Image 1: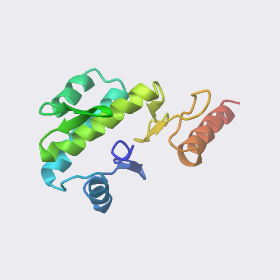
Image 2 (image 1 turned 180 degrees about the horizontal axis):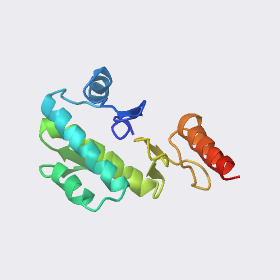
Image 3 (image 1 turned 30 degrees about the horizontal axis):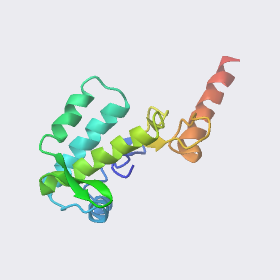
Image 4 (image 1 turned 45 degrees about the horizontal axis):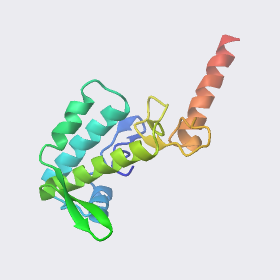
Amino acid sequence: MAVLNSAPVIDGTPTEQLDGSAGHELRDRFGGTGTTTELHHLQRTRAALHGMIREESDAAERLAATLGRTTLLPEVTSDGIQWQLDAPADERLAARTVLAWSRVMETLPGRLRACANTECNLFLIDHSRPGTAKWCSMATCGNRMKARAHAQRSRRR
């Protein structure tokens, strides 16, 4: 989620949070290299994942391209098979991001979605029982969208 939500819209302007101090903290926390090449791969992966979640037609091809030099290698242990990520250092964090997205898609099918506010660029994992959450935050987008709907209904009267 940290990578998916690293390009929020603030005051109507898309912002980039992967290249500032928040991005350096994210890359440090998840074992990144901190290079500009890694940043480029992470941004490209984020864009491809946004496309996958929003069901854009070319998103699968773009995501496959981000994993072009990545493999998982089996390591047999007494506990079973452990899969080890093999990727160039600058592409490893992007590959780990894709693996995390895939795990969410498998374990929580249909629960990862874009915020219903079309002016927002954030995503949410719906943990509600009925699976009907729409907004990244009820306090911001939810209230804003409900206020707009109320204003539209009031104008029609």
